[in-house]
Image (cartoon, rainbow, N blue to C red):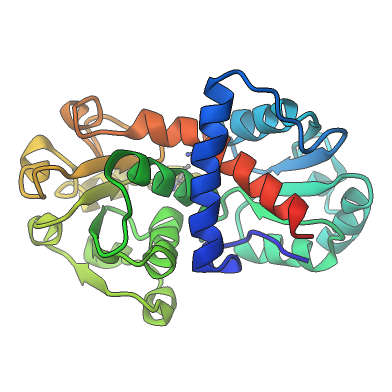
Length: 300
Ligand code: CP
Ligand code: NVA
């Protein structure tokens, strides 16, 4: 069974094909073509954290592909009342064709996948957010062509998105600079295991120099709300500003998975400015996940 729990579940060649397919599916959608490869198929969507983009993109993808989806929140299912993951996995996967999970511990999606009879997609855990990387890589290719050999700089928290960028550096072949406060570095094992050039910085100016893409994310992720104040102090020097973008290459792009906090991790001038491609990243969630759903349907 092929799952999509991290970017490492697909080969570099499969990922490259998937991005090309996402671009083709976007063009078909823009042309108003009806394409229903998942007719009568059902996606189960387990959300233990909030979402706008992930939910809307997966639900729309399934409807446009001729299938349907079921939104499952812990408040309304036995998942929230302690039914074991393995039991839930066996039961839910016996009734749907693919399952998407957004949760806290990454172990949970791995455990679900072990007992699932259908493909499982990681729609964000505390450790990874691979679906967002598909959309980001698609956006980079659309604006600048191949990302192979480029330099990407991650600014801010060494969080789930940062870990997925580390995986992407290996799978898509770019160099990754990571600028974080000392106490908020990415997981050292993930850094050490990456077959890519990953360089850690605590000086953000040094990190962005000569970069082709600058990426950031919120300072406090879902589940860390009570650390907001402490993090605002720790990350005060890690805002992506116009001045910081000025140190990167002149044609550098800016990305953020959203939701964003203007005036915290990014200035309004940058996120709403000419180098920002955040709306393309968001829209591409739809097209990239369609390519992923089609891939998992064809390869299982
Ligand atoms: N970027 C992203 O995953 O957004 P949502 O939390 O709105 O799904
Ligand atoms: N790092 C953020 C990403 C949100 C899409 C979080 O986990 O909340």
